[in-house]
Image (cartoon, rainbow, N blue to C red; front, side, top):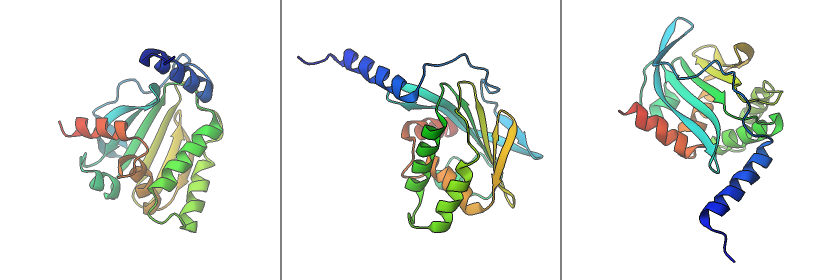
Length: 195
């Protein structure tokens, strides 16, 4: 006997909830509706776009991307050496080990040279910033500042800085590159940017 489409979807959603570890908790996010502009280190950043990261019909986090130029071309979003920011608001709890393994996988997938030992070490160093589970409402900021590097913050607290232009480009490539981790999210952001 075949499962009806809605029944199959319900089973998949339940499986994902069990996999992720919990249903949504009450959110206490600092980020509700993304602003059109934000100020970072004296620079005014323009909203490129926003969207929701989903996995098998389940919302994981909301993301807004910003840059000084507000450029909409994926290549420029990745390569422009300008102040940029990614802001994420978690919609549900994600265990730390699962978040780190998914992020590491996305970054490695975006690498041109998967055997670049220096970049693999940089990725591992970046991941050490995220030690605890990300509960619903957790607010993550990943800010790139030319000459300084990629600064990670959680709920306003600085977690650490990863120096270098190359890592920042890899991180943005994992979202906006050809082998993006999040094709639907990328599509939503670029469609909003091009309006």
